[in-house]
Length: 89
Image 1: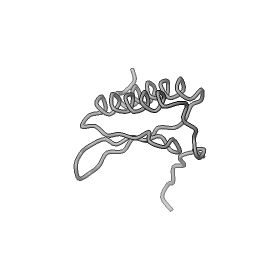
Image 2 (image 1 turned 60 degrees about the horizontal axis):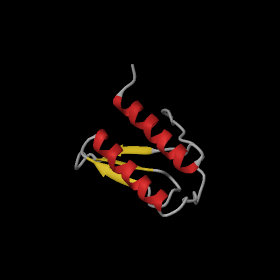
Image 3 (image 1 turned 120 degrees about the horizontal axis):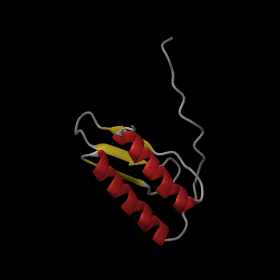
Image 4 (image 1 turned 45 degrees about the horizontal axis):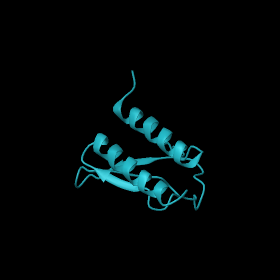
């Protein structure tokens, strides 16, 4: 059984893969002050949104991606090199 966050990442990965023909990373963060979820695709200009829930963020990101696709195939301006995990020193 997967978590909601895993489902969100998988569905957004699929939408972006379809839009771009590749699999860019999606970054999701939660603001400690507002509690809002914010998501963006590194290097994909304009591909960012926010929501009060992960479901709302997913809907908003899908809408943004659809708008960007309608304007033409967006080009990544940089390549995501990874997300290293740094342990204690």
